[in-house]
Length: 213
Image 1 (tube, one colour):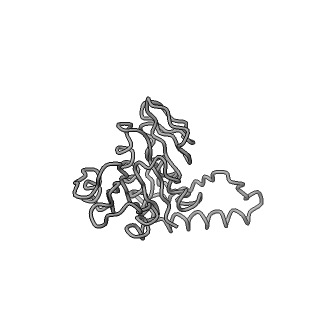
Image 2 (cartoon, rainbow, N blue to C red; image 1 turned 60 degrees about the vertical axis):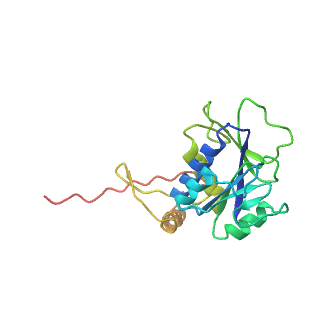
């Protein structure tokens, strides 16, 4: 199922900057990501710098306005479900900028204007002026962590839950290799006495072979 996450807030709160960072970080994690910008202004015949910038970077992006989508269709009965199914069939997650009153899970970008009580579905808060707690409230510099949580939301809590370091250098692995390493290690540990992890983090240290002089 394609997940759609709305990044909502008031004008000039930092929604666009956050959306671009999340798209970049999710793409870096290998998550197939799309972007929709929801606007209350007309969209057809209007060039938009934000969607154009992401399209030029190879990201599927459309502009959604009250009069339709840029630039193929017009109509007032277009829904986010229709847009996602037609234009983002290969994506795992779609970031929708705006849509504060849509029935979607939301990241709320805080500003001086309080969030309206009618806004529902907020599961993350972003405030670029304050530090976050790393759980549900995030600040400037936490975008990579937010993307990791969104990737886990899309692919399950065990997604990319193993890492291999050689010294202090992290070894680059494809997603299925990282999942294979996790499963293999936990499987071997479960056969040992006391090897049940109960959700705890596992650390294994392997001494490398010494180089022959």
